[in-house]
Image (cartoon, rainbow, N blue to C red; front, top):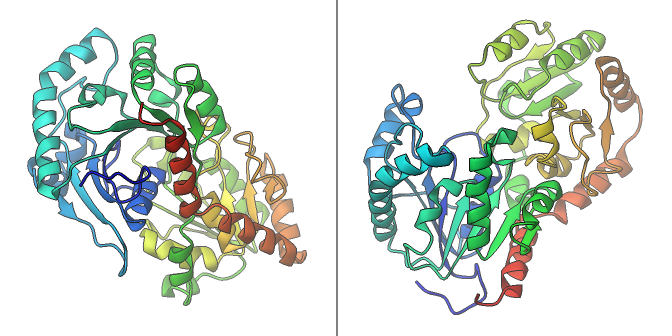
Length: 400
């Protein structure tokens, strides 16, 4: 349904994503969902699964084989709609840069085009906007759906900081062909402005309605864990500083440390979790719907990331404003140059002794003003605010 209104207002939008819909939820999931809640009709197309992603996963095999999009339920009263579909299985090297990647993509692209068109027809859409989310490899699809404009959205350095010259050339070409580029950190936006001056930071946000609707009762599994509680909610992956967490837990034996999230299969993750003392709890992955109540029941919220170059370019984690609206003090490592919103509401320490000292202060120092400041910052960074920023950015560009 073609719209004559402002961009992203009652529009049909196709998002080519770099994840599966049922993976751990991040900005790439939450921002398009917010567009649907605001009255747009959104088709979110999952990344083409490689053999390692679907050989042992019957659901991924079915999704990759199915050209019919599935409707995702939205809260009652939502003005728009959301569908999820999947690209067909990927060919080896399909998303690589250079001559090899281009050759393999040329072979794969007819099947990709057929699938995207079938998904669009299945959802009954006439796309006004095409969003390539961290997917320069699909630049060949620009214009294929008859869209009025396209965006490139990025949350990390392309190839996670390991891009070759050919990879960067692919991203440079895409940036030059889209109307605008949106990045989740100012560092990433500044990097891409050299290729498209119409580039803006569109940082993480919080769904205020989600928070207020889901924090009224404490989950049974959380109630069994003694207070005070220090909570980390995210994927347990190599970017997490497990050694810091283990040593901090030993320095602060009176605290219960909760690491809630799915664990990757990396050997260093397995070793890190195996070394945790007894006051560390591992409840597993929380559904997004559950995580608000767990955050509400925490006495401290943790950002225990290693100080890696690729993390430094990402900026605030997508969960930052969700932590803020929960209200509890936030304790972080100095893993990035924190954006202006975070200054003054974060406690930062680099080692276990510093973390334990901060937790001791959290335990005994009144924090009513800090809680109010964090919650006010969160409410000023809602997904409604992000949509207004995006509409302003696109409106500035006119029709070209």
